[in-house]
Image 1 (tube, rainbow, N blue to C red):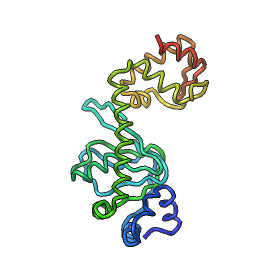
Image 2 (image 1 turned 180 degrees about the vertical axis):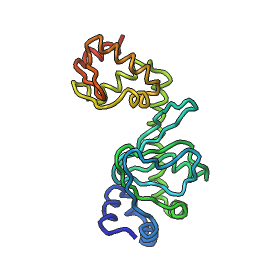
Image 3 (image 1 turned 90 degrees about the vertical axis):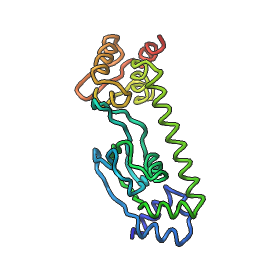
Image 4 (image 1 turned 90 degrees about the horizontal axis):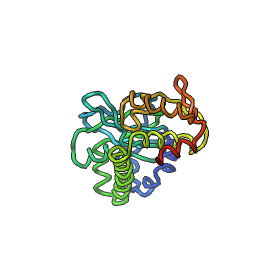
Length: 225
């Protein structure tokens, strides 16, 4: 059984829970559990059975695919007040998890057991509405990712990512070339080559584990060519 303080936190982040019946809430809070996971911890492996639906209270989860060659492609992220699209799909179809889910920022999760998921979904339409909305939001995010990878040039995707990190202004980004490659769906060597070109055009300064954007306007101009 979780504490009253934890219940209040859940109600604040997931207002849909307040619309459940008292019996449903009692079941949910009696059998659900709150867990804390550190950054880099794997939550789900590919082809693993889905036994819980995670509701995110704190932190960020990253859901991604891994190619046979070891390249990663981020599908979407799940933050506070959200749950996982892929977990929902697994619950609906009774299938194994088709991707990987990793804790990107230290996370606190409320884990809803499978049997409660089905019981609440079947008996409470408002819960179903919440899940459908979550599916829509994450599907939209995934489609945007696939559209960018499929139709946008790699250098444009990289510039977009860099400018997103600094809000289109000068700024410092603490990251690695490998991490950027994962985000934009390409190889580390490609990222390193392009960053070197942008450096040569005096738009940024490179350092170990850091990139300083010095001329965002010039960087945006390169994207428009």
